[in-house]
Length: 257
Image 1 (cartoon, one colour):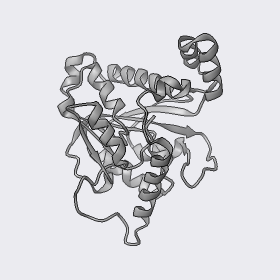
Image 2 (cartoon, rainbow, N blue to C red):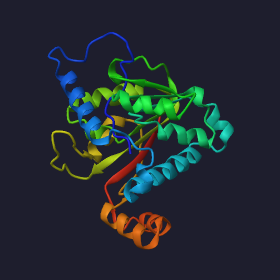
Image 3 (cartoon, one colour):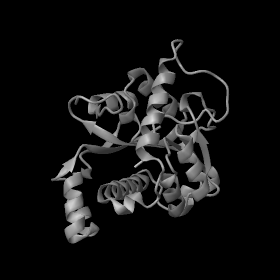
Image 4 (cartoon, rainbow, N blue to C red):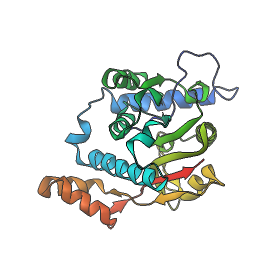
């Protein structure tokens, strides 16, 4: 799961938002957190750990369902769409869209951690990957689809979160699709200096007045996922996850531009 909170300056000029450099300190802290936690990246990590694997599979399922609900029902339809992935990590979400039929030359990924985008370029030829501060980057656009997966929970600065969402939504073409995934709870839950869950009220506020289609409590609890996979295999774990009875507050949502 990629949880990068920014994306690319990509060699361009311009300073961070805010005169006091507060945003720059936040971005440095986010970059340090994910560099220390996720690098060196292992492309096989999600296969070796049941929970990330199930999270990725469920997210893929939701994206596919949402595309169909939005009328994108063929590889040809997807191939004509331009896509931006904010916080793309090592590129696996965009690569999966290519498997569904997307045109790599129309896909852009942007991430705060340069090592992740370097890995993405080495793995997925033809997709455009940028590294740096999303708020300062010229990523092109507008886009037919924008994705933001596990980004905002790693941003504790409220103004920075709002800035990321506002820019991402501005880059969405009218009628386009915005895919969102993160850990969202009904009530505020104390976080840490590096991580903070969202609330549904906060999430809806970012997208207002656009209506959200939300899949709540979508991810099986980590300890249960590991136990089920070890004893019965991943298929049984996915079936249990589909019931929602033992799930946590991982939430997938989408909105139209």
